[in-house]
Structure formats: C-alpha cells, structure tokens
Length: 222
Image (cartoon, rainbow, N blue to C red; front, side, top):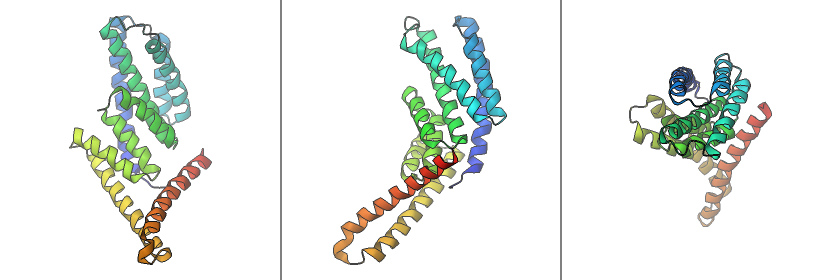
C-alpha cells in the first residue's frame, strides 16, 4: 500500500486533541442552550475513548449513534426557530462526520472515509480537516490526481499547512510516476504514431486498474 504514516500520526494526534476541546465546548453549549444531550454526550465520549485505545470499530459505532441523533434533530427541524441552537446542531453534524472520516481512514475503509468527508464538506466547504481527510483517503486509493486537487483547495485556504504540502508533493510525484509507467507500457504496445489515440485510452485504463486493485486489496483486509 501507499503510505503516509507520518501524516497519519500528526492527524491522529490532532483528532484526539480536537475531540477533547470539542467535548468541553459542547458541554458548555449544552448547559447554556438546554439541548437534550445526555445520551448523545455519552455516545460521543465512548467513541473518543474507543478511538484513543485503537478500537476504531467501536468508535464508529458510537459516533454513528451520535450522528443519527443529530440527524433526527436536523430532519425534524426542531431548532429551526432558534438560530443559535440550530448552529450548534449543525456544528455537531460537522464534527461527527469529521470524526467518522478519520476513524474509517484508520480502518482503511477509504470509500467510507471519503463519504463522511464529503458530508462534512457539504456542511462546511472550507473545512481544512475534511479536505485533508478526503485527500488522505483519495491518496490511499491511488487517485493521486483528485487527492492533489483537494490538497490544493486546502492550501488555498491554509497556505502554511505543512502536512498538506507534504502530501501534495507525494501525490504529484506518484501521479507522475504512474503516468510515466503507463506511457512506457503503451509505447511498447502501441508503438506506431497512428495508434497514439489508443495509447491514451490504454493509459487511462491502466490508471483505473491500479485504483481497482488497491480497493480490492483494502476489501480483503476488511
């Protein structure tokens, strides 16, 4: 597999710190706003504890339960009449999707990680955490072009993000290597000038096969 373990460690430490800060902020907000939160708070805390001890499946289970509670509040529009309370609920939705994206990266379920990162981006298109976690998942599925695009969006928002800069360099380097290998292979098979169009198609097919092979390998691990 392609690896960006150093970036994972930075991201994992940041996730743990973020959940601690967010739990404190949420507790204060709940006391002030009187949002019904006791069960959800317990689920969120259990999720954080499970994540910290490396039990990512249990973390997903608890954070999914929390997310379902939040979605119920949003779907029923129970706080639509109160802008402050509504914003708090939307922030919870963003946070749980971010947490779930990170947990699925740890589980190497990258399609799910992308799904939850996209959910977070729909809530906040400028979320640096969502952009980075989606980029990591795309990188690990060998979709280097899309990973680079997401990382560039992140760097447009946060030019000093060192983890994003590092991963962008790796994505561009791996993409270039893949294109070079595909060109060399296509030249061996489609060597005549009149078949250059076929070579371009072949190059695209090779790229897709690489992604499919990576996803199948991930599925076998699951």
